[in-house]
Length: 138
Image 1 (tube, one colour):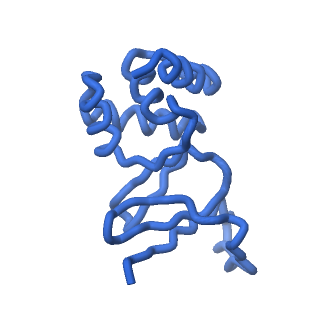
Image 2 (cartoon, rainbow, N blue to C red):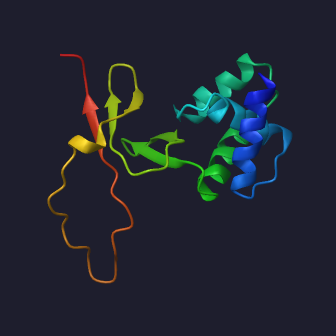
Image 3 (cartoon, rainbow, N blue to C red):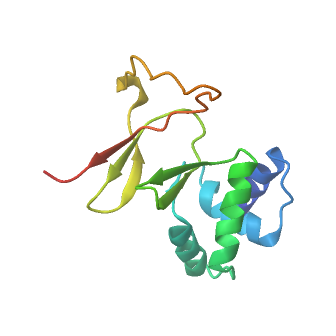
């Protein structure tokens, strides 16, 4: 991992007020080190860390992703109620879920139109709307 990637990861953590532990910096560098946005699962990030020789457990990856979400650095997108993806792009935008490869990619937000949402039940308010468009090769 390049020093630039590690610095970018460390800066990303600092902006959110997170303590830059060795494991957090390593995972942050994998997520934002090249300046690109990522959609990862805990398992894919764990595999990437293993490939770079970073000693981190899968439990640590899960806990770190949760801390990054809680700090406002990432969004969690749940597919099928069981598979979670973590997105470093923080603006509101829809996603394509590719069923054949179980991958998540950004969909063009400018093409999405939501005309109306149902009223929230009494005593509740809409906190956010996740749009996941499922695709398969046709």
